[in-house]
Amino acid sequence: MSDLAEVLVTGLGAITPLGADTPSTWAGMLEGASGATQIEEEWAAGLPVRVAAGLAVDPLSLLTRVEARKLDRCEQLAMIASREAWRDAGTPEVAPERLAVVIGTGTGGVLTTLGQDDTFERGGARRLSPYAVPMLMPNGPAAWVSMELGAQGGARTPVSACASGAEAIAMGLDLIRAGQADVVVAGGTEACLHPFTIAAFAQMKALSTQDGDPAAVSRPFDADRSGFVMGEGAGLVVLERAGFARARGARVYGSVAGAAVTSSADHITASDVAGQVRAIESALRDARLGASDIGVVHAHATSTPSGDLAEAEAVAKAIGTHPVVTATKSMTGHMLGASGAVGAIAALLALRDGTVPATRNLERLDPAVSLDVAAGENRRGSWDAALANSFGFGGHNVSLVLGRA
Image (cartoon, rainbow, N blue to C red):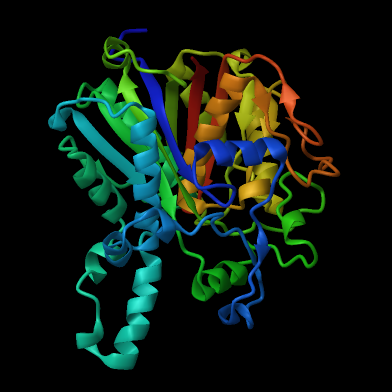
């Protein structure tokens, strides 16, 4: 593999329902913790679903007052995660035109859009915030991060529903391979916990309406799963051309060995096995690996009845049933556009530590699932490569192949 083709991961950043940074998020996954809680706020009183996975830490405690006022919540999360990832990478010295940012999101600044609409209805046009437009635009997170880092190699925003964060990493890989950048900050962000969005997802029967312990609701691959738990968060990685990273003596987590993006062109919300199989097989070819090389799979696995079965069938068809599978949305909930990036981070850390987090709440594996899903306790071992899947409404299928350092 040429130096140009080899892309290394040198920095990680995350803020999730399990923690304010990557180490605390990873520790929560290994402990089998849950970020799902009952929504006690008054605004949730009339909702059909009152369970969600909000952040473990208030992002406003990690930002200045000015930043809090000027940034939508999804932008705040991207800024926090990017700062951690950049510090973690050792603040690389790179020419501005050789540094790019790619941050995906499913809904962008929807909290600003909904909130400013309420303000407009109550008080008229003059009551709107002068920051409303930069706060609501989906490219806001990438734009703000690019300005903070001085990145002039492009600030891009894939908007591919729940596959957005993973597609951003795939795009970052392409930019470096194409020789357009030496360093790319890539990942996803999402913050849309609001009565409107919760009600909308509930109306389409995507969210679980299960009663009882909120921490037990998200149960990927379990026979009694009934829908996902909506979460929020951000995950970003620093990608570097291998030669550039090695020349500066960077600490390396692993590599993005391959990626593939396919579109099912079939149904706006249904999962498509054939499209997912194409994504997985294409990512393997891109990484120049075979199915037997994959030891770990971080599944998209949102805990929906049909979605989990489709992915299980696709993984079994594309690479077989030998890899150890984990589904960390059982702990974080579904962070929508951020989920693919956080999943890639979890897969990299599983390879580094030789530990695959057990899937929480998996008490009775669906008989139709033939995969080796880690449950009950974390799985220990040594693996060289992992697959991280991410699928989104609209037929977006993204598969990433990660390599151990």
